[in-house]
Image (tube, one colour):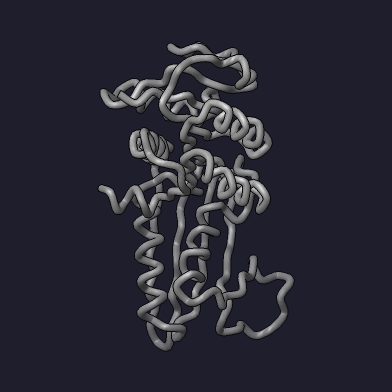
Length: 252
């Protein structure tokens, strides 16, 4: 049994993880952390991590970037693995995750869906095979309450593609301010916000007289919750280091 402390437990994703964990025989949420402690839960909720002295195996963070630094300090102090699924992190926060991975095991993914991470691997393979002969555009769609744009997942897709083409890509966000012919090394990123779209990502490879498109659409937040729970189980008893969904997929 993997014992979880859930940061952001009373948010929409936190409640989705709570539901998935309750139906699982492999995990148990033993405590929650959230600035909002008004919702009823089957576990105690603390507004300050320092007040939480409950024993656990891993911390799962699905909250807000503003809450991350305090949580990471808590994880290091408790010497506990941490799974970070919060999006919209700054470059400094992402670097902090790398830095503290020498002290505790750190798992980070901008998207906890196994399906979207498989899409990233397929997009990387396509970019390598197509070898610069196709223009690459990424379109992401989310609900009207999402704050960051482009999504962390869209950036993760772009970063994965850029990695296999030796980091030669230039990211272009939308095109309203770019009045020029498209450059061959560009990766276009475009955001759509509306309604209750859970999450949809399309990677378009546009070539001469042919188009290849890889897409993924999430119908509910449960797919991300399932991935977060799998990541928590994966991280239990791991040695210090920096882990990602690629490591989890490789272990499946």
